Image (cartoon, rainbow, N blue to C red):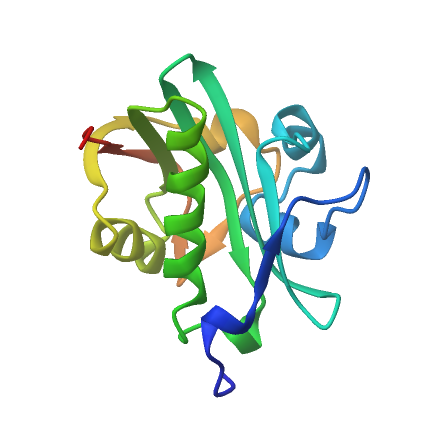
Length: 160
């Protein structure tokens, strides 16, 4: 981890095809699945000196219902608050598009991610049993735990 002020990163809309695949694939190992939800309108990249250091991608499921599909921070920038800044930016973008609910899902094995989302206001609302064994041909192992179930979390945005 480097000493970095997350406010120094510029969060921008990507140019067409300017996706940091190395980062996106850290959060979701299936390029085909990522291509299914990626959109220029709801994807943002955090950059320093024109270098991508983080990314997030939202998807709209209904006029007021969005999902944070992917969020990744380059390893050397983790722990400095950049992820928290990205969550805030993503929620602001979703709200500007009419969101009242933002969901996110993560693996049962992603203990760090579960804590991160809950620290940022998301609450567990359900479990999609065997999601990862149904949708990914190769086992995903984190901290010695196989990713089997998707833990679903939700944040309800309240109007001022």
